[in-house]
Length: 143
Image (cartoon, rainbow, N blue to C red; front, side):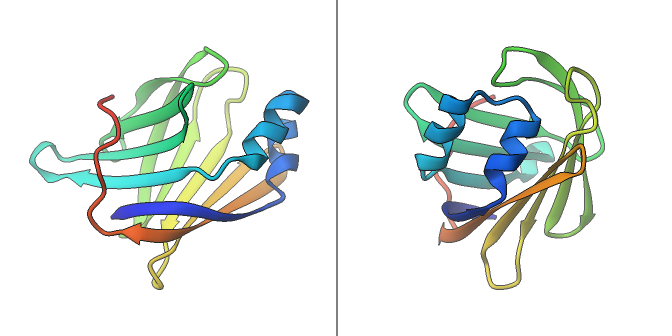
């Protein structure tokens, strides 16, 4: 687990287009350098993934592996999602309901300590690559 900062995107704008992110918001998002925090709250058997973007928008999800949960996404829509782990360092998040049902995020902590997010929808895949900043993340929200 740890805290990670964005280093680069690959095909991320194309991914944002396919999920209907407006032009101006895409350009703003591409200019930001978000920090991603991944935590395991062992006493509650919960995982927490949070992203610090800017003062006006941050997000945080807390989940138990394999259990459906609701999330209010950026558009304001409330959707159902599920996150499953296919190995010890890789989580697959699938949106089950809403306008973008079938959207998938794969979050993976690589052997070199970096963090990769793969974003997939309607045959378009974007990637975000993060480098590790610290192994002791600061809790950035309480979802």
